Length: 508
Image (cartoon, rainbow, N blue to C red):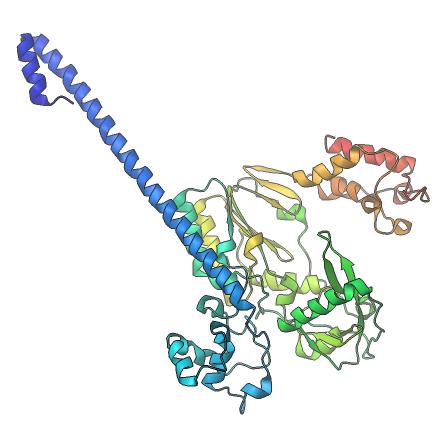
């Protein structure tokens, strides 16, 4: 690249004088300045790419180290005791430091009985300061709710952590860094194990003091081991315990969509005696009001939300249930009770009081804001409240800082509130089947008690526009099917017309 002296010398050699010389120098100086700017821009771009490459390498290295630590923790977790005998480690309600150490860090050595006490303490001296914090805890159950910091200290903890959080696409590096800093600041709330909420208790008020007692249902032989394993895990987590209550409700094992089994309790007889709690749940149509201007969304899912609510002590015996092997009772709020959902809704609404940019539907939370700064601030305040109330959040089902989000069957984002594509695709698949037939699951679980087509409800009621009246089926529409023919339920003519209207409303 030519210098200023070289340009002037060249002008002299060419014999330029006066205005011609001035014009020539002006053009050459301008070209020189442009070349210099391009060179500086190229250097800046090269430095930026190098910095991004280094940042990316550091992030990948940190993720690799985190994965290695997680794999190592999972391998050690197989040697971690989940329950501890009460009588062997308690003296007058206070456990000694060696007992605490053995309970917390047994997994750090292969054979704890072989190593001397002195050597054992020396190997763990950096963690001794943390043992007095839990010296007065009960020794019957060793739960993550009793000592939230254990996952950070290396004790028996959750398989999921803050590292499993999902972030929205299209975020800048600075925006992602802000979300990660907020999440790490409250990392103790991110776990797949349920916490113990301090804001609410589940109360069971009955109209009769006579205990409800039923004999256990017959469980298929192929599901019995699954039932035993599930109950053992629930007992280890402190969700249930052995019972001697006069109450007894039966257990039912059902298949989930993914093929695994789900343990349910048949509380129908107990529910008939339960005094109803009229805690209102916000309709989805009201939840989505006023979100058309919002630009940023985050979705939070509580970890096993029902199990985070403790049952009032005097009501624990009422939750009792029986299996073919044992008699248990719930310490945390079970599924299947008449107003379990109302109790959880009340606890969450109490937690979110004053947070206008957060909506809830049972254990699902949605954060929606117009600006990025407000979004980060709202997330930080929400995490602070969750931590203060001892709630936990399942990280793998959360989404932070996204421009679009699916919530309650709707797709939100970029000023649009529409139908969730997944649900429309399911109806589209049905539209290509024989028009005279429809799967039983679309009509109802019990066709003899059918109260209208499920898909009709979704389109005419759930997916109706705000302010639009919900269609109420006529008497003829209530009876959707004729008697079954060759294992299929045949739609009545009136219901077939409704089905066509449903498809037209969805544009299918």
